[in-house]
Amino acid sequence: MQRLDLKVRLMLGDEIAMGPGKADLLEAIEREGSISAAARALGMSYRRAWLLVETMNRCFSQPLVQALAGGRQGGGAQLSDEGRQVLQRYRQLQARLRAVAEQDWPELAALLR
Image (cartoon, rainbow, N blue to C red; front, side, top):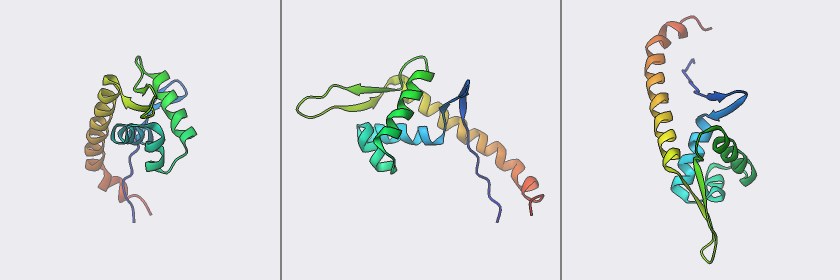
């Protein structure tokens, strides 16, 4: 059975500045309060999550994720204001593109085997 699976990626040169996995990671960081807890929640390694965060922070004009200083309670991470804005705008873009794609999907699906 055919189904529409639209993936939106924002590219900066050869790097994926934002995509569905990175958006999921940002949501998990916001929810969990740390990169390591977000990685666990998504079933990925801390190293992978950290590399994704580094890429996002490098690609945007301001860091999307801010590390919090450690101490007795340990450190953590949170989204910056720009991180929240990028995430919100990306999710809105995904929804709008999906709505447009779903209009044309039946005609395209009819051409599939």
